[in-house]
Image 1 (spheres, rainbow, N blue to C red):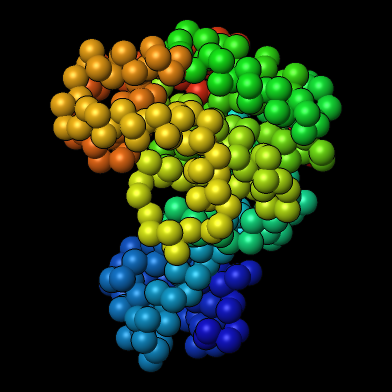
Image 2 (cartoon, rainbow, N blue to C red):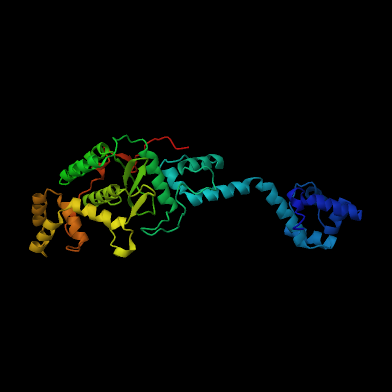
Length: 380
């Protein structure tokens, strides 16, 4: 039975007809043997009626076989009838959902909703820059269910976020990147650290330095703070503004700039997750604490901050923090962020100084998220 697989082509009624011919029985004879209406036997033979468990038991008893034989014929035939290429389509669709968060991509407008698996597959292939479904997506050899902050494995959602940023970055025009232009940009950025409303100037400053800058809201289930990668000879910085606070925004930005100046992200993109989390030094790649140091050096003059902490500790009032911020020409929220990170004050203290910046930052930056979804041409 299993080897012959007759139901792939023939309905069970064909085998029933053969059994009747072998015995010289008519359909009426079998109906009387089964104590069933002749119409039932006729419809089974004609393929218009399925074999029920009750009928299977009767046929097994009548022909000296088993009920399972007739039920297996019926099941295999029905599977063949309803399957067609459906099994393959289901497998393809499952593979697509495995490598990409399809519903999130549709919800964000990154691909279009479709009932056609062919159209869906082509959209995902284009989005992930793949030639065919069995390929591994662009230099990312693994798709982990759970990624550690500095793991080489990216989840499907992280991978999708990166590729959206990659597609968008191609449409941003900037000047050629040079070290001199980078150094000038750092000076300009340091000059606007004191006012949250100046965040809108950042895209233009970085574009002059030859750095593509954009903001992409994270997908559910991810903890991405930012990314650094290169398109040819041009660095790209992506922020997620996962935490809409001035201290986090500026730290993630300068952390990414630390990657740029070190040339990180050229061979493999840097995906920064959980930058506010404290890690043991030996658990992180060397590039990460180096980028942290670059960020801290350019955000807050550590010598002056240490002097301030020695003089004020533990009486950190808002007035004292604002006075120090005014003296150093740095926004007080950035000072508070460092005091939180260093454990000088509890995270619940002085949080009113941690102003939001997303609304200002996204007014001039290429942005995807929070209702904005730029229209771009997919790679393919």
